[in-house]
Length: 164
Length: 116
Image 1 (cartoon, each protein chain N blue to C red):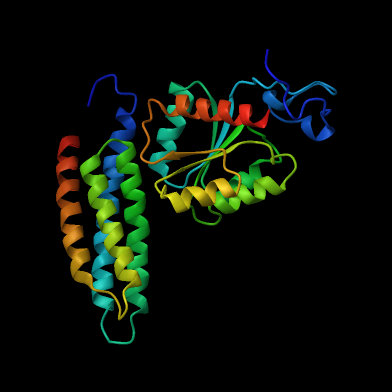
Image 2: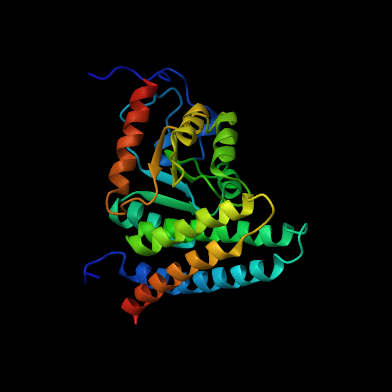
């Protein structure tokens, strides 16, 4: 038997109402700690990599994927669509991944949604900065498109487990 | 390329786009070389080096994702050289960038030949 989620007992609010299936709980319903990863919002400014990510997570991984081309677009999207997980590039124009993470963590509706970075900047000092800001994981570039969704599901499960 | 490769179409597009990126890198490098002229006025050349570093970084990441290690490594080496140039005291030294660019162009041409 799984331990209850830390958020258990917290009633869904009206703010939860118009959003995706994974968050569309009945009022008073409890968050499921073993919730499956279904919807991912990706921020990646490179058109080739974003196309690969869309294919790797959508067609190969069977996930519902929304691609944004920078962090600003992610912040513009979240009032309308809340995912189970954010997958962010670090180096992006307009608003980079770290700044986007910080803003997502400041917003109550997105504060508990795991944020995972995909980046070539994976020196120990870089990783320390990502985790210090609250990242749930890091996927190093280049990544294997055929296993990206598995990797993401694993990190998502670990982040859910850590939240219990 | 395997017939069942789900990335096949994306690979073709990537190669076409990468040829354009390499041409853009060459244009930036020529501009950086041309601009690095008078001592004490290094800013224009440094701006080009910074643009080269960013574009090479993108190319390195995308090429690696598609499994084109030779192009990815050459682009990453060019990025490193561009960053070193951009941070060099006394301004841009275009020679290491030209050397890195030549390697990248050779590898990109080899990759493009597989597309033809």
